[in-house]
Image 1 (cartoon, rainbow over the protein chains, first blue to last red):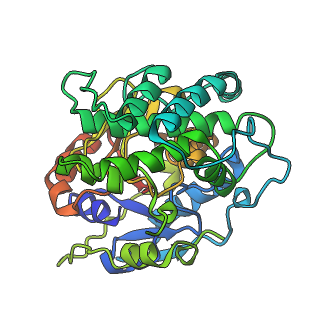
Image 2: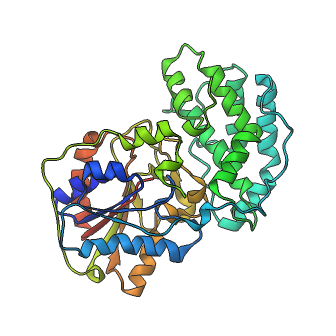
Image 3: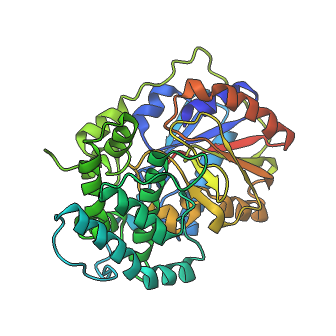
Length: 242
Length: 153
């Protein structure tokens, strides 16, 4: 975020921004920025490649020693080696075919799939010693149930004090996605983000359920809910025309 | 290849043309050699320590990430879903390179790593973030930070 660099620098702190979108950085004109040719979400490049990441960090920090600013933008030269497909990768199981179906059926398949993925997810946690599931604060089974109940038309109340039902729904959807994608990446293969997201949105029951949820809830009378389901569930690149 | 040209045209156009503040000043702070600097991460990835309040919508404030935070404790609560999260899921350094900073400090390439790091949620209007950013500058200085790396997501 280049604007943060401007504010902090005005307060007397030297900053260097990582830039993922060069035209934005050129417009904002931060004191220093290193543009990197990586996909959105990966400002330091490939996961589990510490030497590569360190080169990115150091290239950025070395810009603090330049004396020819303000407004210097450098380009990191190397692409993310993990952006290429790993053809040895296989999803954890081949789900029942068909991305469509009645909402009740999709809701049941979503809950069943989360259960089926438990072993794979446990392998993931053992392998990486972490999970990013927990935004909703609900155990994953309850998370899947909460999303599924919305799909069944139940409009369940928020189970968490201080959080609205639409907000918990958004967090629960994020948690279901994270759980499925972590489970799908368990093992020694190194799938690209494209491979994982293709599986999730084209093959998994969870992906089909989230597509259906977006359709169903856009007919809601609740404008806040409509806004959330329209913009914060299915990525723009995955929204199907029509 | 993962450049802007790889995104759907409508998304790429929206990102490239996103309205940015038009600043009237061009601040530029110089300092000691990198090997003497104390470095903090100020992310805009909507990072939050597990159990703390996630970002809701476009909150303009920031979250505190102590350097004692472990990888299994850090979550992303960014409102946007239009970026890859699988890299962060596998390795937090993809977004929050604390391990790399520690290595650089151990090697003497940087002076030290800050005691505390921070995260904003980058989809927020920068103008709304400004008072929080200026307040944060004071906290960073109290920690003797003199170099800030600003990763987006």
